[in-house]
Amino acid sequence: MPNTKRKIERTKLFRMVQNFDEFDCKFRPTIADCREVFRNINKQVFNNELKMPNFRLVYSGKFWGECQGNIDDNERCIIRMNKSFLSKRLFVYTMAHEMVHQWEWLVHEHMTHGPTFFIWREELSKFGIVLSRKYRIKHYKLN
Ligand SMILES: [Zn+2]
Image (cartoon, rainbow, N blue to C red; front, side):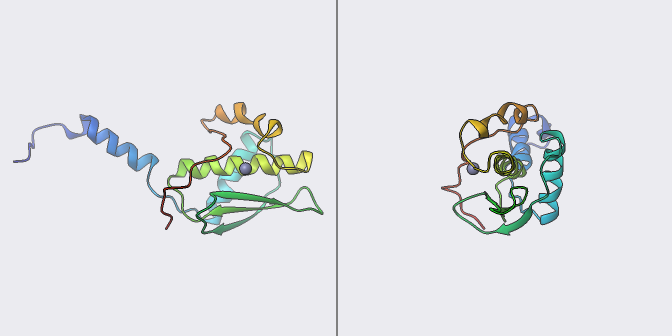
């Protein structure tokens, strides 16, 4: 028989499942989501130095995001974002990662996962954004 008298919302299990909803549900971004998150990170972290890139939404089992710089104009780039993320958090982390590449392209005309990349790690961490070389994509089925 189900125990109906318990305060379910006070249980660990309830809170754990709530957290799954908050952090682990699928997130399918739109171009408007991309632009909104870009604007926020650009304003708070990059002092509005980055130009709005061309966003493309793509299905890929190989990457969450990808930044392609324009060889003739280092202010411009294309950022491809996956159509399906495991969570909104991962989407925001990925956007920040690609924006660091965009900044590297603007300032250094290269993209790395080296020292010029990681100088943004601390600033991003103030906003709770984790800057990593790679966010695990294997073992997840994208749909
Ligand atoms: Zn990268």
